Amino acid sequence: MRYTEEIEINLPRDEVVRIFMDQDAMAEWQLGLQSVELLSGEPWQAGTRTRLVFLTGRRRMEMVETVVSNDLPESFHATYDAKGVHNVCENHLHEAGPGRTRWVTANLFEFSGPMKVVGLLFRGSFPKETRAQMARFKAFAESAEAARD
Image 1 (cartoon, helix red, strand yellow):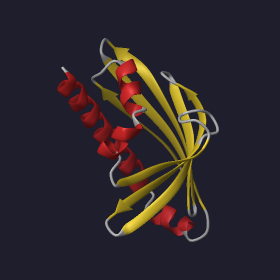
Image 2 (cartoon, rainbow, N blue to C red):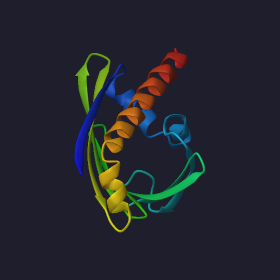
Image 3 (cartoon, rainbow, N blue to C red):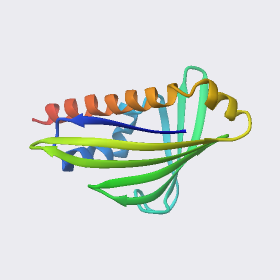
């Protein structure tokens, strides 16, 4: 399954990148994020592997992020692997005008085993969750910037 989502953030691109890369702030906009554990490599560098643990309700989900490329401020590409799910996520940040950034994310989800059924049944929930996460980031980034002024 492939889809693309985008959102405009009312901040300059360099500020969006700074907030995006702030691992200490990730739990503020990534719903249910419980822990971030570096497994190998240097943070944000190609080849780096990081374990992310989420708790949604009673469900614990663990995934491994592998950085494919980091060409920020232009782009950041990574894969995310969880049991039965492989996600390729390509993030692009475009200057959308003075003090504005357009974040475009292209996603490819591949499912295996029992997760194939989940992927088919809940196909529409994946783009919806991506949109919600991007909106949470936008709200957090813009309020974080406002709090610094």
